[in-house]
Amino acid sequence: MVEQFELGKNWQNLKITDERIEQAQNDIKKWLGNIRGKSFVDVGCGSGIFSLAAHKLGAKVTSFDTQIRAVDCCMKLSKGYWWSERGDILDNAFVRSFGKFDVVYCYGVLQAARQAHSLKFKRFSVIEFGVGKGHGLTTLENAALRISKYFNIQIDIFGFDLGIGLPKPLDYRDLPYYWRKSLFKMNIDNLKKKLNKSNLIIGDISNTIPDFINSNPAPIGFVAFDLDFYSSTKSSLNLFTAKPNLFLPRVICYFDDILSNDIVYHSEFTGVSLAIDEFNQKYSDRKIAKMHGLRYIRMIPSKWNEQIFVFHYFSHPLFSKYIYPEKIYQRG
Image 1 (spheres, rainbow, N blue to C red):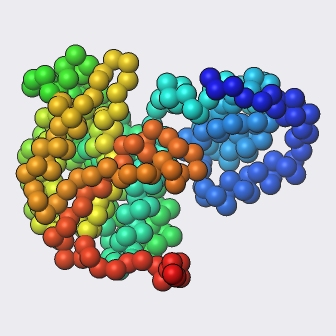
Image 2 (image 1 turned 135 degrees about the vertical axis):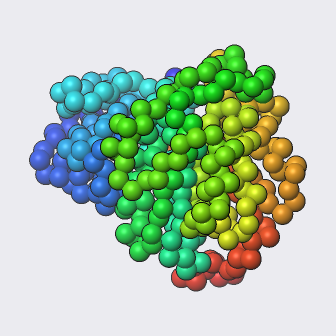
Image 3 (image 1 turned 120 degrees about the horizontal axis):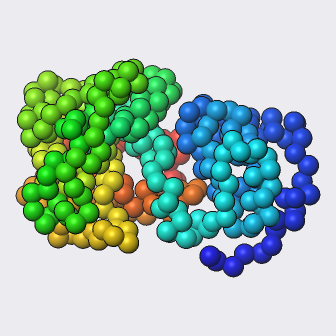
């Protein structure tokens, strides 16, 4: 853990009043809108006042701080309703332990909506490949509901899954030392009860993607790939072989399985990265490329910043259409 100044005593002396709690709640609502049911991570929780405010607003709270006294303050406020622990945002292993939070999908939908709105689209689609238990799909629903109202645009949601868990790995490229058959089984009936407007598409994507393309959906603006295997990801990328009318000119993509941990070692020779490289080698008028530098423009850099890519459809008739907002034009 990086050495820090001892600031915990200051937090222990801070008086938490109803007035301060209300102000913190108002700030959260201003910055994040409705967070009820969402995951809220308080990085550098300090006194814990924002964790408490988020809890009162209905969020699922986790908080951490480098200072043990700050953690103690937060734990006293939590009264057991959420967990606070000592940790450092610069400790990659610690940050990975928190998993994937709602912000990554919200980011993808928001950026897609901004592009669609700038190009005067009234409707677009978002997709998740690899639905599993459905957390991502319900997150897409929640994000789409709020963002569609802000931009006055319709967002269609689609989730693709085999429905019976992972298939059997085909060869070494599917990393069978880490993935095995039947992981991530879906309870289809239970999931359908949780969904409000998502379209759940069950079956082998080598069959369901062509049918989906032929159904002529609204242009796709965001795709989350969580298929684990090289073979499955390669099949899913066949979506990007469709004609330009099926897409926004630039499609935000999230690839879940490209970062290594202490067990699985991802590289450009296996897994998802190999599927992306092979796609890029095959097509000259469209490419999937990492969004470079994203972590440097985020308020809180996170591992998902390294997992955001963009599908650039260079031959799309709207690819070169100017969409820069005139009100923030950079005058020389």
